[in-house]
Length: 54
Image (cartoon, rainbow, N blue to C red; front, top):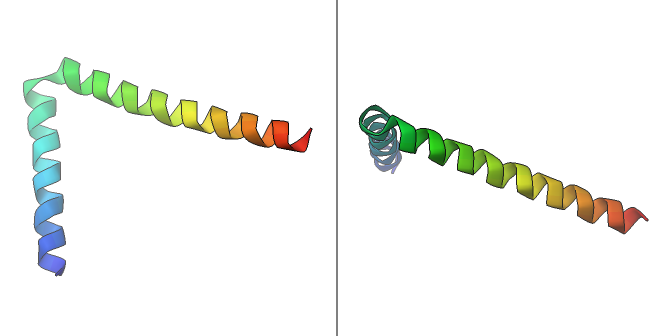
């Protein structure tokens, strides 16, 4: 089972490298979108706890 995880991880990393090399602008936009989603989720959790405490 470990080798399946290693193969899957290698494929994901390989695809990420291929995507970064062949379409760097799109890869940068995808990373920016992911960070924006994480930041938005963190802000929403913060607002939730703030309103819960008040």
